Image (cartoon, rainbow, N blue to C red; front, top):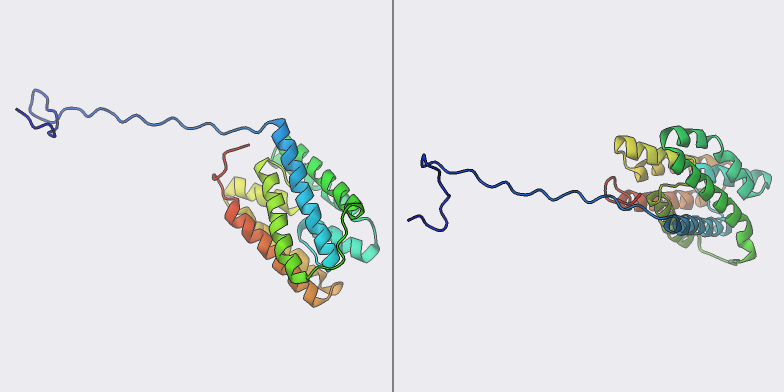
Length: 225
């Protein structure tokens, strides 16, 4: 009589076939509804607009096309929102061909909302003083959170963000790493118009935001789309 723990044997005395272990079915990716997308795009754009307001008060800069828009705004006095919206126009073709129509349309909406919120923001909130170090750290985290909301709902704020998300989706290169390189490069271009101390704080803000995205937005971690 065989032991209860012994392996069942066939007629030849050899171990019999082992029953296959059922493989769990893959859980389908959750798809966001239109209301979920709308609130995420608005919240992400709002967070970034608040950050840009903090940066403007502290005299700091940011990277990507927003940074270029800030430079033109400081140098010419043109409205930031209009300049930011215009600079992003060439990037929509790249987004349409590489990331798809849905991503491009959502990005267009997010950029338009951010441009509007930045221009009307001073009517609703005004900060008399903010320490540039605090602005760099808090603003970097707030902007990173806003960009994360947008990325997880297949949107962006144009420019370098489109490129960084494409490289992550296509080649697995972390978006935060690409974003940090581009943002720091754009901020350093401001040395000819902004004091060195402000540029240094701006670089710190870019690093804080990019490290936050680097840690929080990893390929394959988030299943929603």
